[in-house]
Image (tube, rainbow, N blue to C red; front, side):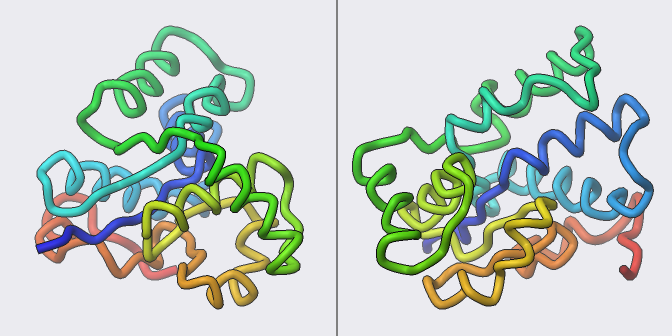
Amino acid sequence: MTKPKLYMDSTCFIDMAKNEVGTLPKTLDNDVWFCKKLLEAHRDGEIQVCTAILTIAECQHADGFCDNGVQRLFKSILTSGQFVFLIQDTIIIADRARKLRWTDNLAFKGADSLHIASALDIGCSEFMTTDGDILSRAKEVVKLGIRIIQPHETSLLPGKYRQGGLLPQKV
């Protein structure tokens, strides 16, 4: 049986770091909770959480904080091999990113195009982000076969991860 695949944009990981240093707006606490639970589900083999290798380069600080704690958080999540599947950039992905504009008439910043193309290439059904520019284009992108959502909107978190501990809030 194929595991459900979802893509986490770099904003999700940066928000987790901001939460740790206390600079995350309270309105995003629920999204961070969902991100953490999704990473647990990936570690447990229930789902596959994917992100591009580009995310490693984008996750440098949390609102200017880049102390040892922030660095440890990014390293443990992104490069430990436990919590995410890293997608290697290829010429096919780069070309797909360019075709978002040329063929699909969807103009995104270069890095955002690479993230979306990476998610499409590996067959993710959900693309999670807190980036307002990407979220504002969700209705346009869904025609490509992927839902652009905020983490709390996921349909892929198994029920057992929604129980106990901090209960997700209604947003």
